[in-house]
Image 1 (cartoon, helix red, strand yellow):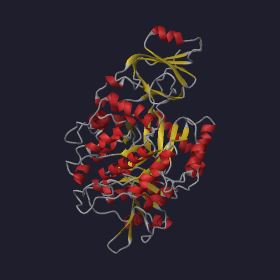
Image 2 (spheres, helix red, strand yellow; image 1 turned 90 degrees about the vertical axis):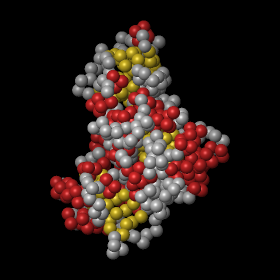
Image 3 (cartoon, helix red, strand yellow; image 1 turned 180 degrees about the vertical axis):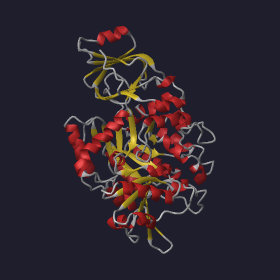
Image 4 (tube, helix red, strand yellow; image 1 turned 45 degrees about the vertical axis):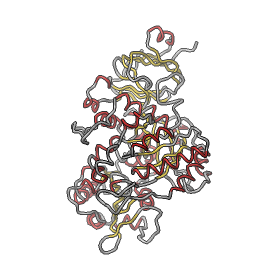
Length: 548
């Protein structure tokens, strides 16, 4: 009988199947889990003369965390020294400009100045942003400032020139704001208008590309993240990017210490030859195409989320969908038929209903095959649509942390009745919906611990509730399951990831303490003790004991 090469043991193991942790061990041979047991006799059965035993004492052993929705390739740049992320705390346009001015002066060698985090609804001073403000501090270099929600850009004149911003250009969706003189003011909304900005702003320096990618991966594994989902909506005819090639090179060299699942664009035709070539090119357990992604609507903050009735603060507007219903139905039917699960960005209740209608039509026409479709964000659904998520086997991919930042912003936009089920994680779980946690990085920090904290408290980091009624808070075990098995199910990888079970890949993390023994506020101080991918330790803390 072949023995385990590594055995992890602890007083506290959370396997993502049971609700409570238990004393036991996890035995690993190669890249697979070969045993999960609770007795010394079982442990000794798997112990051989060359078995490494790591005694984690009372530290929590659990499956690796899966971020089911982030922008990995954009996040590489956002995680680098080239990005100013200090705008998130700014309270006015002028404060944003001052922050960027200091950043630009500190980096005179940067050819482009980039930043993220401005958000008009949270400003105390309602003076609107304008390109002229940025021109006053930087006229020679292009300045690209992404909004906090990632759906708008604020540019200076040089950046507008570089991106050839044309207010007369026909846009499928999105807009270019004009000032009182009828001239572009430097503010662009939504993907069609912002796509050139994203490409220009997030271009990695070729000489540092491999290092920046590796550094970002190392930061993720240090947080216990073993799998990420890259939401990169590329034009359907766009070739494989150099960044993807670099990741493939890392994998070939045995240096890709994380799993990356790609979700390219759903496209506008039923010709999936380009994404099928992606799927054939990237098809390993570490780097693969898991499905396709599309936007249905925008965001509540700029009134582009699609509602079923007008906004409270803008009675003449219900938002819009980027395409008519027929597009989504036809594309999802074709994608599912070709074996692609589909993720749809839906923040408004109208977008959620449209998406569910399209998913239902696909299930009927494709004879109810087990597609792993999902709705991303689903901020304020109706109760009837929560039940439909379960009936149609559609995952809700949510980012709990977003509500901590928005606070009462959705109530201002929608009123108390329509925000009854805002970020309704508890209600969704109670109705049997598969919930997958994520951060949407770089919209929110990628560190999972604050996401977990908010999900179980619905409070900010000072302990203040962010809503009048915190009935949607969930248990720690529910939150950890959404960050593991929920994400694996969404990716259609629950047969090999997401839980500590025999036969699954050995993606395992160990926290520096037993999270189940902590008060909610103490979670914020929890750190990762060890991160393992495919049975190999890819991160360990300074206190890590390599064992016997």
